[in-house]
Length: 250
Image 1 (tube, rainbow, N blue to C red):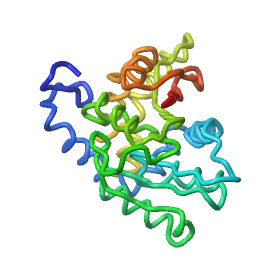
Image 2: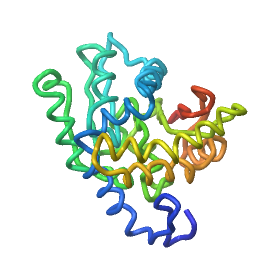
Image 3: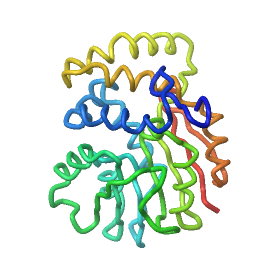
Image 4: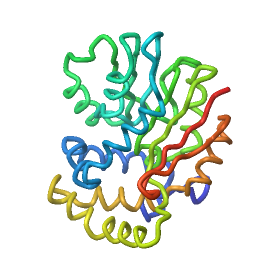
């Protein structure tokens, strides 16, 4: 964030109040092809990264587990939590974008009906009560939130004591040569692939730029601590292309 009233929309500085509308427009455009494009962009690696997130979460089978997945409208993480957990697992999928939630509801159909609910809401001001959830996940969504510290404080508020925060997000590549190849691929190939798959490359140009503007992992870990979480750590994956950040409400 560049000041109290401006923030980044990709490489462009915009008024803080305008960013959410711009982000909404991006995801309205790509919602129907979002999961397909994730496979194309990452060569399927996003599935392994998400599986690693669920392995760290380890939803229990033997007792009730109330989980919140934020910015997860299409259901990719929420469905994984339900598949990994037991019959007593309950998942709330929250997203600010109605088109993403529409896709998720269509994917869920009747399969998870008794254990799953979809909520439209803002990560910066969750329409949910205090101390309700055993865990909170957000995958590839936190960098699109205009006020990240507010979202982290809200995550802390809705978690129960002993609850866990987990965030899967793009990070900083720390392997020589891979960093150059990744940079070239991101800016040269991904917008073109986005245009081919979704008909519009500009949303993916923003998404690539937003990755570069996201804080480095040490700085984001500090933000998690400042929100009140204890034992903030991160685990780089695939040479630092992504990282899983963790914190506990103790």
